[in-house]
Amino acid sequence: MEKKNLDWSNMGFSYMVTDARYVANYKDGVWDEGGLTSDSNVVLNECAGILQYCQECFEGLKAYTTEDGSIVTFRPDMNAERMMDSCGWLEMPQFPKERFLEALDMVVKANAAWVPPYGSGATLYIRPYMFASGPVIGVKPSDEYQFRILVTPVGPYFKGGAKPLTLCVSDFDRAAPRGTGHVKAGLNYAMSLHASMAAHGAGFDENVFLDPATRTCIEETGGANFLFVTKDGEIVTPKSDSILPSITRRSLIYVAEHYLGMKVAERPVRLSELSDFAECGLCGTAAVISPVGKIVDHGREICFPSGMTDMGPVTRKLYDTLTGIQMGRVQAPEGWIRKIV
Image 1 (cartoon, helix red, strand yellow):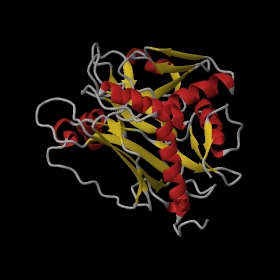
Image 2 (tube, helix red, strand yellow):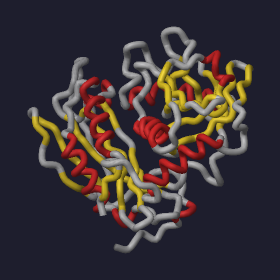
Image 3 (cartoon, helix red, strand yellow):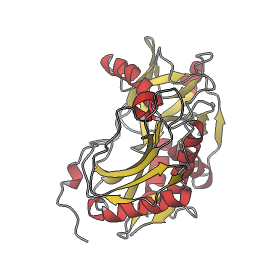
């Protein structure tokens, strides 16, 4: 199989139309058999539920070319399960886990020529998503839905190395108490855009959202979970019912405990204790871990000892181990790697 003639090593993190995508439709209480299509356009009724009441959820994962030349995905079963959970909260029909995995395999195989080669620093980003396609004017769930999977090759999230980020404590709330903060839905990301643009306009890379009830504890950014390292080497991640359950964060916690022999704690993290940590990172599919060098709380700078030039030593070990598992350089736990080609 011949790869596309692309400059893989200089690819950006942006959308590119590929050969095939998967589409399945839900109507009259059942999913149709679904299949691949070459058409990248979505045609909707003007009154579709997604346009009127934002009934939509999505996932994000990647396909990799490993050291031995295989094409694999990383823990896609967890994406399937999380999407089913999201659908439950949004009153949408669940797309069955096995069908999700089969559809994923189909799309990646059909676009194998678009999967970047090993060592290029690029990967194939995979976006499964579902939305209300049936017309609805009253405030209620739609009767019809569409499930799709698109893929696009993307370059490394960082160009020229993982430069530590500078964050600011946001004046906005990302999610309401007992709301949908733990659901991977477009509506959560839409509300974060204004806050994100305000942060960028002030010269910051991203926001720090606090818990909406008391505004004293760290929750997450607009699109990533936090991971902290104490000065005695313990991993700490914030605990809250309104934090999205990141698959990358959960994988890093496992790596820390079972591969690196580190202590891990999931607990509320107070804004007032940030200066006690040695390292800070943001966890997500795009970059695995993005190092944070500084957090600014309304003019008060909290600088982590790991500095503003590179990842801290513990963050680096976590990053190298997890990416090693994804790329086939490190033995993976049972069931983490799904081989496609």
